[in-house]
Length: 242
Image (cartoon, rainbow, N blue to C red; front, side, top):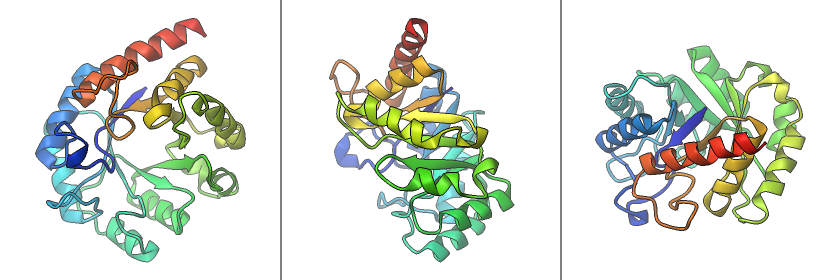
């Protein structure tokens, strides 16, 4: 599986190709799916461009994307969108249109309460396990770990030459991941080395403007769709060489 992460916390200043509004995200989603993405991860944004868990904005974003594509759509629940853990759970419980899945960063305060709320709503949980944090240990000990949809093994090391080693260390820390599927991905300079490693290991992965603005050869990406097409090529080659 190659998931497309369409915008993340990127700003308009990162380039006109970064989709922010519901309509722009819907267009980018349709293009990414046409290029081969089978799952989507988005950050709903306010009209001012801020990440938000607002029920109104989440609903508008999901409805716009689902009008264009039929693949699963997930959203972030990152603490930057709502710093107070209790308020974050309240926002999620107030959603009127539900995503297929939502990422929960396990190192953030209130992660287990948030995961419980999502599971109560019937929303799949992507357990975000960031390298360089205590998330792997917390997840391994969590009673919710066996219930998540998948584990997002998120490599925060952006070094071209070091990200793969960091990825392998993170996977070792996760161990069996309670038997849950693992999606392995990197970011910025580490995005492509980690994606190729995922291919060699037979793990799901993701790519998109959230993770990198550049193609493997250093050229600036024109769109999420271009990144997805290149990712499928790189991923397939990595699988064949494993």
